[in-house]
Length: 460
Image (cartoon, rainbow, N blue to C red):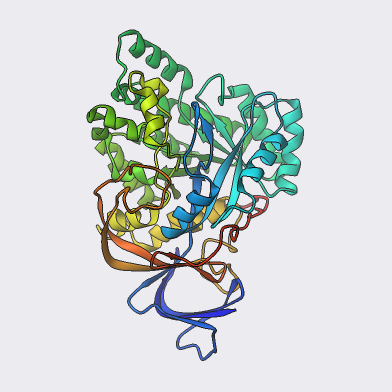
């Protein structure tokens, strides 16, 4: 099958031009003005933006957490992503204590295989680093194509590893060409503040926010960066939210240390006033929490300065019934919120359309940098001859309102209910095939493929 996309304004991380794109099979075959070719399908993209398919480097699908499962599985979650112009997601395989990394991989493969609409890859979350775990790293990178390893500096007793384990993991991952990523918040301080608030009877969702002050992220970020410096490890900090943490990265840059940083769309769009809504605030109970307007401003600046490289969602939705388990105790509210569908539209509307970032920067943070950092470029993350034809035809003028009544998440509320946005993904191609066209689904469950990623040698 072949497809010709005509007259679109093609935006990559570095380019902005009008041309035609000819697709044969799953890849881009030619790009040029007024291409004289025959195609099975012709799409007129006049007046539209033609973007590389989005890559969301941080999602949690069908994840067991806090007595529930995140409500989007691999079918519903990846379909929602596709509706929003995200064609590849990277989910987290989470090791259980006492079990191997390969045990966890087989469990997550069982959840995903044959059920996925978008393409997908895995990070491996290491929660029990020991001598046996250490021996698995080489094959996970070299044979399975899983080159990124997630760690937690919080959630003691379930996910958290200590600094000694962190250093050991960093050295082993470095040896085999991978990268260590981190949830950087100080779990001990958070646990202390949580216990203190509970003892005083402070049990509403507001105290989830107040138990995770900025210093808990700032301290852990600096400590992780220093461990990465000492070991020479490739390092990446997930879902950064605060000015203090950003300044730790800037300090590292002064000694020429390369630290990659991700933020999430909710931290750019929402602020801590969401915790002033009584128990409805449970919708925004996530870790780290939504922060202050000054942190929003700092994050937008850091994107333009190149301190933040990628934009994710940390998509981890729970049904309202599950959130209500914490109605009388904020520590029982499952952490997470929906958002996988809205990332591309929100960053265009709040960033590009309002003059905060350029179109090229939007493509860079939503697609290209994730592809480069995580070993998928140039197969993914750009529009170029030979690259996968993951393409979004985006209408920059369409206004619409985000709502649980229209979103495709399997979640009965929206984190952005009533939020009007400008710009919409109209037609989405995955590996050369029209997958979404004006809201209609054109592919079958299982069309999405697992992306084996390469070793990471010279990132960016």
